[in-house]
Each structure stands twice: as C-alpha cells, then as structure tokens.
Length: 223
View 1 (tube, one colour):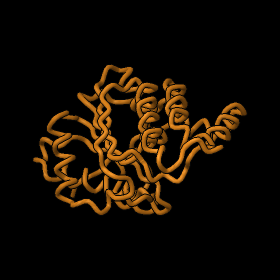
View 2 (view 1 turned 45 degrees about the horizontal axis):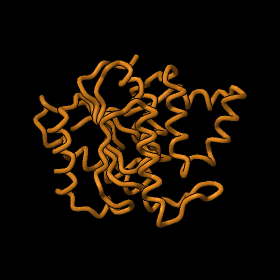
View 3 (view 1 turned 90 degrees about the vertical axis):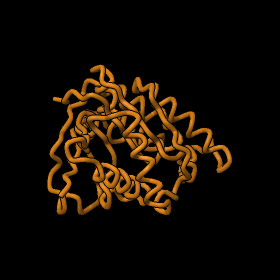
View 4 (view 1 turned 60 degrees about the vertical axis):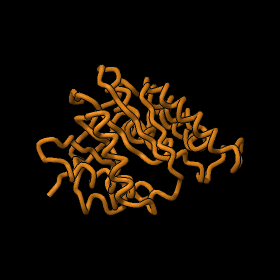
C-alpha cells in the first residue's frame, strides 16, 4: 500500500530518470489526489541515444528531450514540472552550496512530506550521485522534526551489500499503462528497450511483470 502524503517532491537530473523507477509511483500519488512536483535538473542534452533509427542529432536533441519530458509528465498526469536549467553531465562539477540552495528553495516552495531522489554513491551515473548528495545535504541541514521523509533509488552492483534489501515496495500495477506511456514518451532514449520489454510483457515474462508492477526504494536514514 502506498502511504498518503501531503506533497511529494521528485528530484532527478535527467529526463527519463523518473520513467524507469518512479513513474508508477508518481502516477499513483496523483490518482490519490496527492500533489507531486517533479524538478528535472537538465534536459539530458548530452545523452548518447539519438533514437533508433536516429531521429535526433546533437543540435536538435535538447528540444526533443524537452518535448519528451513534457509528454512524459502528461502521461503521468503531472502538472507541476520544473525544468531547472542545469547542463547535462556537469551536475557533479556544480558548487555544492549552489546545489544545496537549489534543493532547499524547492523544499521551501513545495513543503513536501516526501522527497524522492537517487541514493548518493549508489546510483551509477555521476549526475545521479551528485543530485542525491545535494538532496541529502539540504535535508540534513533541516531541523530533524521538520525533515521530510527521503526515499532513494539505488542500483549499483554493490547496493545489496551496502544497504540490504529495499525497505519500501510500491505495488503500482494499477498505473502500469501510465508507466509504459511515460517510458514510451521518452522515445529518443527508450525505443530500443521498449520493443523488447513489450514483447516480454506480452509473453507474461515474470521478471518483466515484476519490473512493471513493483517500484522499490531505500529510506535514507540520517545518522
């Protein structure tokens, strides 16, 4: 069961980050009437995928990904999408205090009871880790009694060794079609994998169905 929240703030660096791990959760919160804000830090303009067959180039990709992000938000029913204007593949080089302030300002504006982001150090991509670090640092500076709950996504190879099993499991089967629509909205990045995934789903592949119907999180615990 997905817990009722006052407001959910999702912070990721790239368009499509939300689609893979939390689009079912976002869609479900919205269906529950919970306000959701998605702050996407960049337009993913340095992404290597240009469609399959290619329909983008290095010049056109930023606007294509911006349009895809808007379409993904619409697929989830999300109306509060914030594009923060940072540059792809540079989040790790941004000043720490600048990033912490960016997150703190979002928290002050939205007053979330829950924030969803990446677990720093266990999210594979440097932009993922830097985003998670900024969120953790911003929340960590808040009074303990005022901190929102922090759900994180981790998928590095050593995640189980470091964190154990995820402690939050969301059944999002009811939002499965919205999750697929969100993934398909990011066609420049996902078309190659969605063909295979939809074939596996049609064949009732257990792992594919589990991926579609279940979203996992690690609650970040401050020491």
